[in-house]
Amino acid sequence: MAAADIRLSVAHQTRFALRLASAISSPSNADGAAGNAAFSPLSLHVALSLVAAGAGGATRDQLAATLGAEGPGEAESLHALAQQVVQLVLADASVEGGPRVAFANGVFVDTSTPLRSSFKEVAVGKYKAETHSVDFQTKAAEVACQVNTWVEKLTSGLIKEILPDGSVDSTTRLVLGNALYFKGAWTEEFDASKTKDGEFHLLDGSSVQASFMSSTNEQYLSSHDNLKVLKLPYRQGGDMRQFSMYILLPEANDGLWNLAGKVSSEPEFLEKHTPTEKVLVRNFKLPKFKISFGFEASSLLKGLGLHLPFSCEADLSEMVDSAAEQNLYISSVFHKSFVEVNEEGTEAAAATAAVVMLMSLPLDPPMEMDFVADHPFLFVIREDLTGVVLFVGHVVNPLLAA
Picture 1 (cartoon, rainbow, N blue to C red):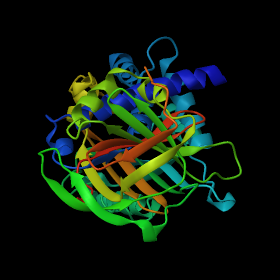
Picture 2: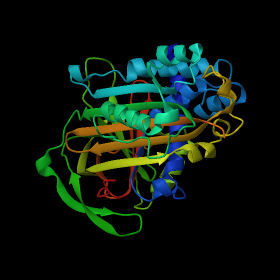
Picture 3: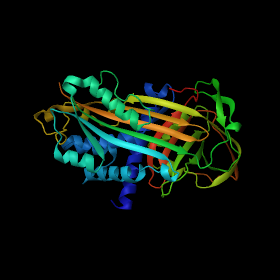
Picture 4: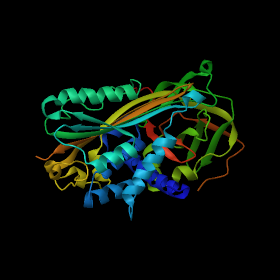
């Protein structure tokens, strides 16, 4: 895959990420609007790309369109991007002092439903997926425990249950899952002795006392109309990758939802607002926070136009080699994420499981700026060289841990 093609594919992945982030951050979404939220668009993108590898006809076309890979060779472009991401972006760099990164795909298939050799070749070869033959028909609860244990191990214990009770049963034929773990130390860590309590203003006009990290160091900051953006780089390893967290702080205390709408409507929003220079900071305050967030994604994905894989018209005939293939559909897409930000850096994890069942413009920054994140904000964790977005979320109250 050529460099230009990778950048285009990543741009499509980012567009998908921001559309989904907007849906999650919408006040009309009960899961996301009630509190803090975090998710991994990359985890979801890879899981759905793997579904696309087993889809045919209109179902494959709709998956490709939702994921931003329309046109000739759309399936191959999805697989090529996944291969590049898995091999390059998500390689572990902790031995060389960089972030600890772990990512895995898993295909758990019922013994009665053999995988098509072509699907298995793509899943194992491109997505580096593990395949597991399991017994959903008589041991569904045990298989759910197996999947959950697999996810817990890969996320270093941060996500203990991706499949809730009752999410799989004797009609389940396939679970496609992935797990992502990220732990990075800031290039410049914050001095814990300078962390002080302060007032954080909530969306309803009330406030809470939260722990704020502070710093007198120069920071990557940019100022725009009604918005400030902070870039916090993570310590690099021995390669070219550069992971960073971005804090998008609206000027207004209640500006979170308006900002989320702007970000999703402009795919290059983050790129256009990325700080490129360090500036002197007069007053710097960033709250520590910890987010554990889970949701069932099928309704949000349907809202983005992805209907066929979840319906009786689903065509997943390229996934399994069985007479039952005509009745396969996706019943659920479970996703969980965990993100913690403190003085040392960030620990984050995500997992996605798709269950397949049988039918029954920037301003010039001033020389000195303040950055006081004492009200709700958005955040993004991405790899800057490729632009791949690993995590997106929002903080409405740093005291909410779950």
